[in-house]
Image (cartoon, rainbow, N blue to C red; front, side, top):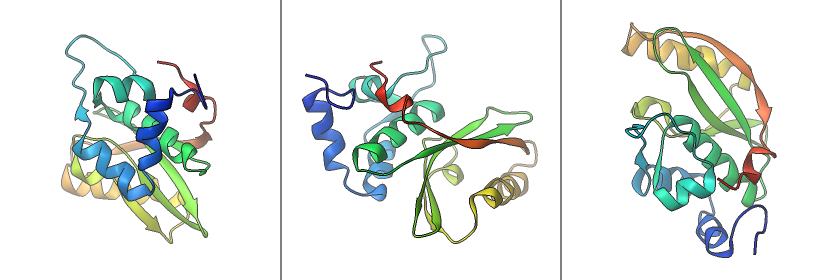
Amino acid sequence: MLANGFLGHELGVLGRLTSREKIQRFLEEDIGYNKEKGGAACRGPRRVLRDRVAHCMEGALFGAAALRVQGWEPLLLDLEAVRDDDHVLAIFQQRGCWGAIAKSNYAGLRFASRSTAPCASWPCRISSTITIREAKKPCAATRAPSTCGASTRSTG
């Protein structure tokens, strides 16, 4: 039986991720990084649970789905890169502050618990961090955050 697009046992796993920190820890410790050895793929949250691997976009979709199950209204934020892959985050707002959940093979682009900075300033702060640490990977642009209610209903 599907509820919110998930089977009972899948909702059980998501239901145990009762905080943003637990969602991020699950992505880091229980989900491997998808290097797409079998070719390009974009797993939905259900496939991430089944296959136990995710890359950046898959991790953001999973994070958004887990946040949605917990009653949050997550958004997706795409950081568009110049000479590297884009990076996508599942972002959330709590009492006027923003936080993010992400899957990355670059440790600096994962969890942000909450920031007092407005969402629009995040790409600039993140871009500066990437540019300083890895001068070859500046952030070119960002796309406006988009709601992801439809994304969390994926059956894949």
